[in-house]
Image (tube, rainbow, N blue to C red; front, side):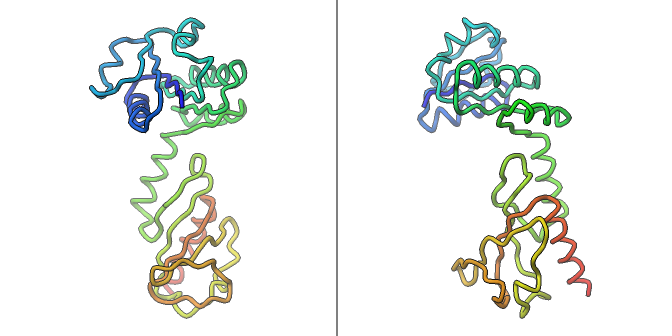
Length: 219
């Protein structure tokens, strides 16, 4: 797959290197030639210095034949415009853009762009790691609007049925793992010690579940 990465900062250089090591044909664009020094010595993609909004620069990077483009500079406006150009003018089907300032994330969504907000996502992950040890994120969709959490069953839940704990607005049971085997969760299934539950939930849904766990543990 031919991929163009716009922006060779720490984020872009890491992405470009990972794509290259996965066997993709990678072109990376940055307006500063010195930015390329951050790349790993064994990176063998093509480097293109210049203004990404210059058509000649895009042409040299091979945008006409690109299968995917990632705009990951620290300039939200630039990422938005480049993503729009790649998607609407060059008809690239796989366009992903980085949102640097969370205040502007809704603008990316208004443009219909696939967006990754590393600041929002990272802050949410750190909060969970600090304050919510009972649940662990195993998969994140979008920018964390919906995630799959692994929940180790509290002792107070043993003997109860899953139906006693649900329905819980904003969350859906995905699976229950018992003795190393996963099961589709039936609501009449009695919980046993050591069970691990996978739950798909919004932030509000998992917050409600965490409050329920705390209330049960304090009861």
